Length: 176
Picture 1 (cartoon, one colour):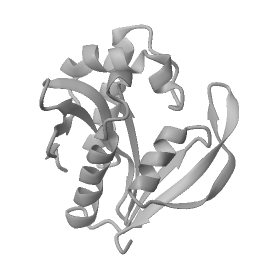
Picture 2 (cartoon, one colour; picture 1 turned 60 degrees about the horizontal axis):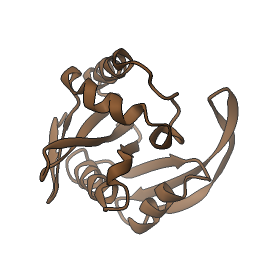
Picture 3 (tube, one colour; picture 1 turned 90 degrees about the horizontal axis):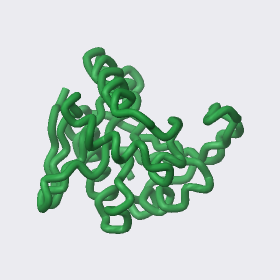
Picture 4 (tube, helix red, strand yellow; picture 1 turned 45 degrees about the vertical axis):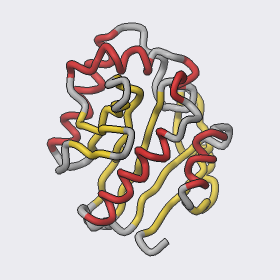
């Protein structure tokens, strides 16, 4: 499995425990995690635990998460990756988060394009999925900009922060 990807402005590399301080800053921001299925982190050890969990999934080829590093500042500005990999069915689900100070600058789109290119060309996947809360307008705009197709609403399909929530399903096929 790939451990790093590059774009014009970003370096995506597999997360490391040493990234915990930077990722804690992002994952402790209530605005950033508002639509993530986690509670705001209150301790850096929570970020370390998340990175270790994601590393275990990566070792089994079930998921991989990258730290997003802005080349200009050499700072970690978020994370992205394949939340689940299903090679038998040629599909993956993607996820992403960007620090609030970097919103609206096209970094999410740039990182996702890199994930798409790698998934279709190297992993030979057929379908990439993204599940998004209906109120997460910014994320929906990113997916629409990248020509993901809205497939419908998964009604009360996930428990998040103690309640069942709807998720919109978006997808992009290799033929799109």
